[in-house]
Length: 608
Picture (tube, rainbow, N blue to C red):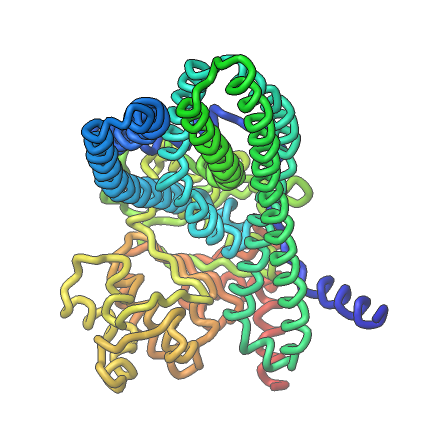
């Protein structure tokens, strides 16, 4: 047993996932008010109608016990008044019919309202996340983000469709019952209500524990989703290293944690209802004992009033029990809303200035003026870089892994902002212009290209949705993608699954080239873009790029130095600093770092 436990711990160490931290805050009614503010757009139609239906249904429930107890027993039955009895039966039947109709419409309107609110919250959260900076996604797994957009918002559905309206209905019912009970018999009412403070004290003590348990459920779900996301995307690696058993053992551990968190939360939720039923039993005992005394000894309570009182008392504990359920929904909503608002309150690190102006029709000149950048406090990715890339030039960035090449590309696209110094395009600081006006004129091709679910033609058209079919085909021909596309079952209209798994790595890369070129950018960034393409395909692409890169600023990041020989300017970087710059011939004559990189690479090829 110990060996198995130790083996599972080793698996957990190998598969480590960052988890969201529980948010330790007191129950915040202002935050719940913020959550309920999503109902405001429907406060002029659906909400008033639902409230009207609730008032009608509640009024019927409050009137019927009086009609049954006091009027039917104390008047119609006691006086043997048949006409009054028939009239009371008809009235009660009509009231129940009215209540039925009101409840049908209440449920319909509240379901509509609840679904609309859930739609609005999910749209708001997704839109907000779309606009957050790259650093936000660097620090969070896709699974944890998915849980907040899907599971956390779904958990609010019951609160908005039933919880809010039930809260109103039960409060109205409790107030009405209390007033009627006090009117029927103040002494009996006070005798029964003495147990309420005890109930309030115990239920309040459960509040923090229940909320914390639902937070843990969300945290465990995020971890489970993260593992599922990675496991499915990395299944080929898992199978190639025969790690299926270890992966399943880790999944079993995460799945068990999720199960245990749900069981703990539901167990704590389940404690409230039995307690209400116990209180109900105690209240009934007080009613029978003290009610009988009032009827027989003091004659201050009639049989009809006693029956009405008993019906109202049964009704009294029902909304209290439901209020416990609504309270649990509020606790779940609090746990979920804390996590939702944590994301909604996240501010983009890269944001526009209030007076930002659009940058249109750029020529493509890029300047770095003493730029420093750090991904964290411990290590600087760039150390006072100053460089100039002329408009229309093809510039190459070379250097060892971690030298700062990709960081420069990220700063040009303004995925991150420089820690200090300025990045300029056409002499204008890119912090002073609108983000989309910069990025819309820049195309980036990465080594690990992303292909979306859809057709080939839709994927190429992604960066320029208004492009015609002929323009898409021309872009594909320009990069040599047309040859393999025409061999597919439906050509350009062939459906590709998520991440383009039916295509080879090289074919996916060619599609990303076509996508970038169709967007007709003024600045084109190729970040190891030819690393996954064979030498013959690369030669064809190089021929196409000579024409397509004309009058366009191109930045090529490459470890394969043969791809950058014809670059106008080459920057050699090391640990965030520029060591050398110049053309291929100039740097070879210099016999510095670039010269040794080229020689080492050719020597490696010869050995291969």
